[in-house]
Length: 260
Image (cartoon, rainbow, N blue to C red; front, side, top):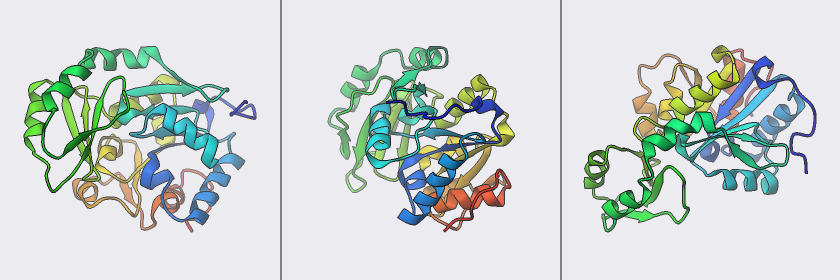
């Protein structure tokens, strides 16, 4: 199977690149809006690049593309910024070693230490996926013990709560924002041609990175509050995929259909 079915210019040469979160953003909104956005991307591959920037792991992302008919991205910033990878023609994700070296060094193989430190902390349930450079938990707000934050900081690591239901432990200074900027620089994509799209707190660093950005209409309240005063962020009225289309049109980044 060849997922990039037609030859296309290098991503740096294209008019526009969408760097988008998945859950609630690229996968959000009505079925009609998603279909309009996805069809528009596929019809304009010569001038539109696609990067997924997500908390999901690469295997989940590729499974979604195979089974749900999503447009295949050409690059992935996954695992809340701890994976930076190229999507090969055969649909497999191939990490880019020179971009991940600092991430691996910052993490320093501390997964077991994190799990031992947070074992038994109220309100956190360890997720079963064995991530390479992060540890992630499901969070129960009613019973969550905020002491977890201090414990993580004492390890010299970062913590992130998103959608009030996920707790991620990350290498210091690593998140979606720094990783997408590192990838864009590596690929030589002019920053003015990129739009970052998101809807929860794990998108904050990406949306305030200085790149064009949109918080789609269904964004969590904590995110919209933190974005107050960041004039470079477009706040879409429409949810999910429709909000992305709305921003592309409003910011004049490409000839795109309006949100539906």
